Length: 389
Image 1 (cartoon, helix red, strand yellow):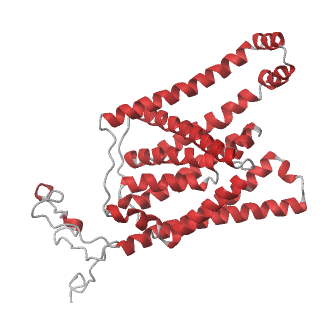
Image 2 (tube, rainbow, N blue to C red; image 1 turned 180 degrees about the horizontal axis):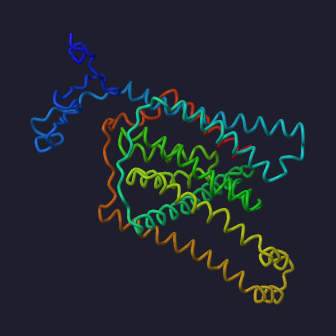
Image 3 (cartoon, one colour; image 1 turned 45 degrees about the horizontal axis):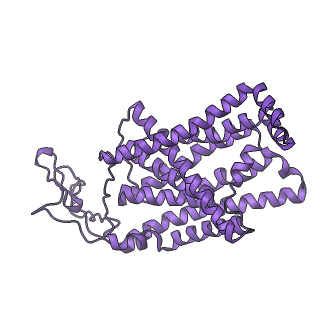
């Protein structure tokens, strides 16, 4: 019998519908959802329409299992990072009580378990989950720059919103720490080279791979909208506090959109690197300067003449600091304008996915499953602990 005879081959089934995938006899390509593919593209059918076979019924159970695998993978990432980080911190406290006072050691304890153990475990759990890589599209320099300005603007607007929400909570619960960004406070009092290594190099690379490359590739089969919203929410919740969570969510959505439109993870890594540099290294350079370091002491004295003399004697430093503040506000305004104009001109396009979740079943399919519930409960519990305890 001919070894190439395929009459006994088992049919292939779509993982989310359970329906058999028809195979073209010419080239073996599939005919999923009525979009038949032939060797000669001029005879290929268009999308759905009159006389064109429609997509098979959506299988909610299979799709829910897909999202559960994703949620469980990131729950493993979260719980491994939390338990290992706190475990190492407790051991260090018992062995050397003063060790955690060292900024380098405290950063290593916080980040190494997350990136060296938690992230690889997450990647191993994600293996085998269906992926769909975004199509690669070339963006010009001005498109890349515009995307960064919008992302940076949304990050600061989100930070303001998070701080305002935190202040409202603190007005009702005075003991709460809802508007406090502990990471920002730690960064502004830390060592420069440690911030550069942790916040500007390793952090952005690891987070972009985890929350854009690995995550969005596995959410994209259900549409760009699902990938953008879900990845942004998960990225925000993982930060574990209100202030960071809100701006990280908004920033993550913009990054996800850029990645899905370009297919180039290096662009969002670059965005993340520059944003963290401007948020952690530049402020530290300014705040650690001799002039600004003595400003608090002069202001505490309450002498207007001394304050005026101090400022006039350090005009170069204050000029740089004022330029930095103006730059931030300028980028925020420019980002809002660019976003409004881009949306008004219809240039923001959200592509539908291969598998379309019915509108009434989206929340349930995406979030009401074991894996996602574990991830959401874990992250929400961390937010509550960091806010009220």
